[in-house]
Amino acid sequence: MEKKIIFVTGSSDGMGKATAKALAKQGHTIILHGRNIAKTQAVCDEIKTETGNNNIDILIADMVSLDEVKRMANEFKQKYDRLDVLINNAGAGFGRQRETTKEGWEKTIVVNLFAPFLLTELLLDVLAKSDSARIVNVTSKSSVSLKPDLSDFHSEKKYNNLTTYGLTKLYKTWATLYLATELKKKGIENVTANLVHPGAIASSPSVRNADFGFFINIMVKLAFPFMPKAEKGAETIIYLATSPEIENVSGKYFINKKIGNDNNKHHTPENEKIVWDYCMKIVKPYL
Image (tube, helix red, strand yellow):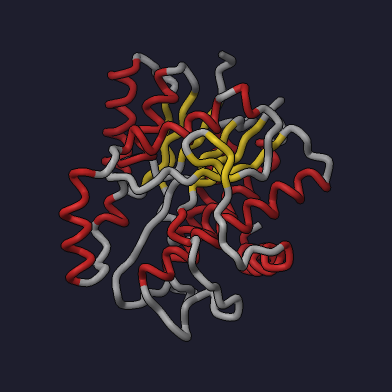
């Protein structure tokens, strides 16, 4: 297998860590991302020891800050002249009280949508230098039954942390599908963009420890020991990152290594464009 340069966001814990470790075992160069430098460095050292692969690097950024996302992208480009696989795995759910960034943006949509959107845009030039680059965006089927209000991206009219989390994943899905179409329109045939739903995984503490209310918190804690582990959730991500079977496949939604769809009845090309245009409006000052 050709060795790749692979950047995995949210890889200091959970499914991101499992993904990074498995890809490191295959001999690829892995760039880990986390918020905490000590924790991320410890994971880096652990992966090096367990896999025997010393081509493991770290980058640090809090994805709630687009300034930090831009800085991290610049640091990547100072170190590497190409990128073969970008795995936008980092995500978060927050508490029952709506929280905002210093810009006044709702935090969930920043971490789950604007941050990976900006990172992808900033790294497109180094992705384009790869003979065959892949963008893998982790999403969630929690968005299937939701009806989005595309005039209220920041949940100012109505905030519910479970609903807001699902909507941000829905928007990420639509933006990814739009990106795949745009890449083809621009004749960028060597970069693909696909989505993966990993399933309900016993993984991210940022979601696991979020406050969803007394009864749901209890249900999550009771279910957690019986949920599939991070390694199971990572399987389709790894498949999308490396499998020759999906060479040149783009704009698809994968579940269990097979093409599926999100089945959201509000999905239209027009709504894709609304989400895309709004994301572009948000990230434009950082490009």
